[in-house]
Length: 74
Image (cartoon, rainbow, N blue to C red; front, top):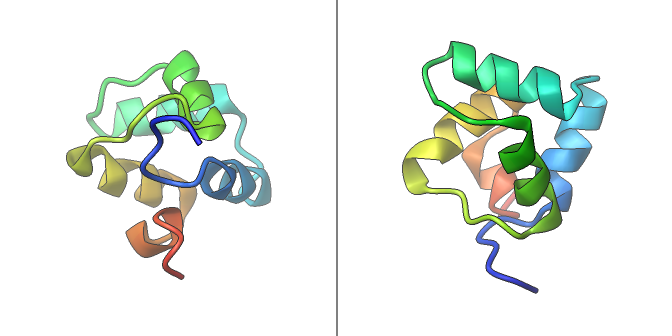
C-alpha cells in the first residue's frame, strides 16, 4: 500500500528488537552522516515515505540488519 519501497513493518520490528526509539534511530543515522529526522523514520515505518537507494545502507546499519531484510527478501 502507499508509495513505500520497503515493508514498513521491517524497520519497525528491527527497531523494536534493537530497543531503538524513532528518535534514537534518527540520531544514530544522523551521526553516521545522513540527515534524517524522527518524522522521516515514522513515515518510513508507516509506508508513507520512499527510502532512497543511498539511504538503505544507513538504515540497515543503524538497525543491525541487512538491506535484503529491509526489502523483504530475507
